[in-house]
Each structure stands twice: as structure tokens, then as C-alpha cells.
Image (cartoon, rainbow, N blue to C red; front, side, top):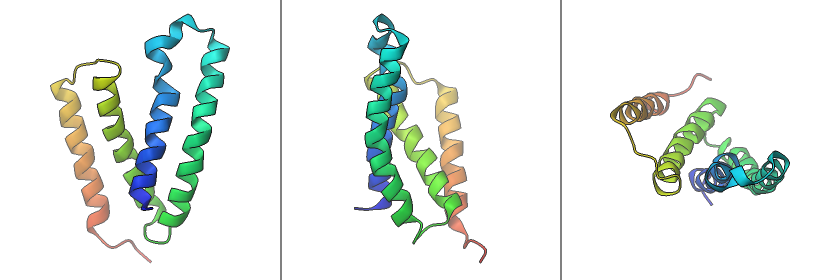
Length: 113
């Protein structure tokens, strides 16, 4: 399985672990939200660790982190709109485009040896 695909799946789990309780979790005590989040995050780690370990054979550490952050933002964009029912403002779109440009810049040149 490719690094990007594993990172995408891990980010889906992590987004729900970090932000899923915002929609329904206010009725829960804080300890329950933390416990549920940690259980979901365990699955995320089981996907992210192999993604980074295998990805490091093809990418630098910097490239892996930049790829992960871009995937995180893309996953969160979908999550915020579909799950939290938030609206996307123009400044978020501009910020996202700038981050995509930064990622493209990071992968455009050969990393120093």
C-alpha cells in the first residue's frame, strides 16, 4: 500500500479522534472523550507508523511531513464540511492553495545529500 494512501487513512482516523467529539461529545464527560479519542488514535498510529517507515525509503523526512500535513488539511476540509457542517470561507481556500504551493515547492527540487 502506498505511503500517501496509508497517510490518508491514518488522517481520517486522527481527524475523528481529535475533532469528532466536537459534534456529539459535549454531553460526554471529558475523560470519556479522551478515552474514545485515544482508542481511535491507536488505529491511526497503526497506519501512520508503517506509512512513514516505508515512505522514508522514497522520501525525505521533510517531504513525508509536508505530505502528511497536506493530506491532513484535505481530510479536514471534507470532515469540516460534511461532518461538522461548517462553511468554507475564501481565506481558508487561499490558505489551502498557498500550502499546496509550498508542498509542490518542497517536492520540485532534489533534496541535498
